[in-house]
Image (cartoon, rainbow, N blue to C red; front, side):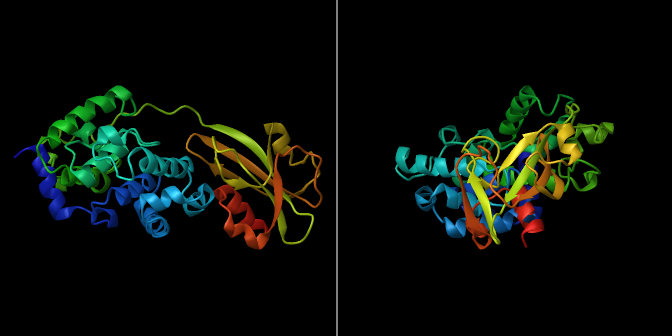
Length: 336
């Protein structure tokens, strides 16, 4: 029996049952795949239902205001995903007359849709004969082949893509790709893989040669960088706060925030605010490649500072705006 068929047979018996696997609707599959790029399944399910309940179709997502889309993405982080979803929905309406492209090579033309997402939609919604590679699948292939190529290298991904495309050729790509992902997520885990119940065990080089603890090979990451910031709760009157909207590009693009300034590490460590604010709290906000070291100060008068276009809102209005997790944490700890 072929490797591809082994995976399909295993999936039909043991695969995970997830809400977006019960549909062939490319829109719902797209939303789910984008949410799960940086979110655990357990957390992602509630966001998936919440998002598609408010935006049940491409047309309704395209017609929405970006602020509202960001609000419904609030808590998921990596907000460029939400902005790209919104832009791609508009693209589908204008360039594709409201109809989803049906092949992964065309899907890649959509804003924010890369090789993984295009192949996932193409396979799960339209049955495209294409392998889908995520981190779990890369780990499975690396161990199965006993391949020591750096897992985060573009050449390795391209090589493994060819392997997976060969395995899925002529098979039920939807079942195969779901099966590969599930094997990686539930059996071929990063630590202590359950090799004895793996459907690929008989042909797995890493299992045979005792290499599961060192494969896949991933070079050590460079030291993380840190930025030091002072955030300001400007509140001249009770139960109001100053906010501003960030530029659409870059970190937290398009979200609302309270004014903040980057400072030197030495100044940050001194806890002496140059604006004379009253110290409230400090915390570390962890991003993918960056640590944000944050101090929060309260100002009861408006400082002579060029903070761009700002406005005051009542604290009860905070739920109406989309803020980053970092700012929501500040509100939670200082305003309520």
